[in-house]
Amino acid sequence: MDLELDEHAARFRDEVRSWLAENVPQRPLASFDTAEGFARHRAWEARLAEAGLSVVAWPEEFGGRDASLLEWVLFEEEYYAAGAPGRVSQNGIFMLAPTLFSHGTAEQRRRILPPMARGQEVWAQAWSEPEAGSDIAALRSTATRTEGGWLLSGQKTWSSRAAFADKAFGLFRSDPGSERHRGLTYLMFDLRAEGVRVRPIPQLDGEPGFAEIFLDGVFVPDADVLGEPGDGWRVAMTTANNERGLSLRSPGRFLAAADRLTELWQRVGDPADTALSGRVADAWIGARAYQLYTFGTVTRLREGGSLGPESSVNKLFWSHLDLALHETALDLLGPDGELRAEHGWVDGWLFALAGPIYGGTDQIQRNTVAERLLGLPRGDR
Ligand SMILES: Cc1cc2nc3c(=O)[nH]c(=O)nc-3n(C[C@H](O)[C@H](O)[C@H](O)COP(=O)(O)OP(=O)(O)OC[C@H]3O[C@@H](n4cnc5c(N)ncnc54)[C@H](O)[C@@H]3O)c2cc1C
Image (cartoon, rainbow, N blue to C red; front, side, top):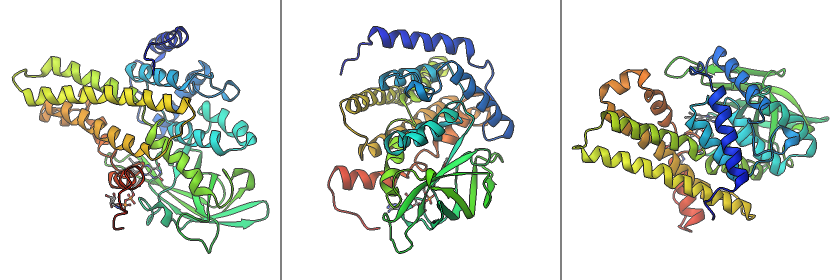
């Protein structure tokens, strides 16, 4: 792995840096868990797209600029360092899009990717069900064959941003006699279609960060099956591996937080408190280690490798790194840090608490690492 940037990558990084310096909103946008904030974040996605910066690693025909994965990592570093807004389109661009690139048809890519890149169509992930979170293969929502497509019925839950999103992707049992991972189909549907009811779930702050989705005979044409009917589990693993292993959480997010943490320590830290300074150093090293690990992943993919169960190692690492960064900052600030949002750490900390849950809990990742990477015996279920 060569860590020197070539001229093209260095030029690209400089261009991104100067565009962000001129365009990142001076004041943070309202949370995308509110109707107003969602609209503002959507407009920000459109602005990024106009500059060719919303999906840099996609092919140009879909709104990208054919950047390499390494350049995408550099883009993300610049994006977070500039304090740019969170990506309201993240489920679409970081999870559905890589799945479309691997399993979608040319028609699906042409139809779905450009409006996603411009923020015109924001996607939600409709996977979890009341009895199927960690054990997603226990899902009960169904897809029943009908002329020209499928009828979806059932209930999904904990769908982030579904309260305001336009469309969703999910897994459905399409073979009524099937069990567990077999007989599932990956389908995309419109959240405003007839038969869909979206019920917002408020978070601690009262804003509808999630929603339940109730489906009652919702028609979905064959054109919106992703991959082959019945092969949904395999397709879903592409989404999950991207969520855990590369695209959803790039190192930029943690490098920026590590730099802020170091500045905070320089301002308020007590050099005599070696335990706390040690934690600052560990968190900073963790962010750098994750950056190098990601360069390794990018190199592996460039050489023809794929994202596999290693993604679970990655997910365990970044979710705990995020917690360490935020908990250390709050300990540096003392009780004031938790009480006063203007320090800029408490919201991030509240979200970091969810890291070991969403995208598959820690216990599930550890099972995957134990069984699929280390070859240890399957534990009790
Ligand atoms: C911030 C946030 C955003 C989310 N966004 C979305 C979204 O957009 N779309 C979506 O579909 N879902 C989303 N989720 C839901 C998330 O994917 C689930 O919460 C997660 O998969 C866990 O499922 P569960 O909540 O049903 O818990 P359960 O599966 O009931 O787990 C409860 C506990 O039991 C443990 N456990 C369960 N099975 C095993 C096992 N076999 N071995 C060891 N331990 C086990 C779990 O690790 C956990 O500690 C989100 C969750 C959060 C917190």
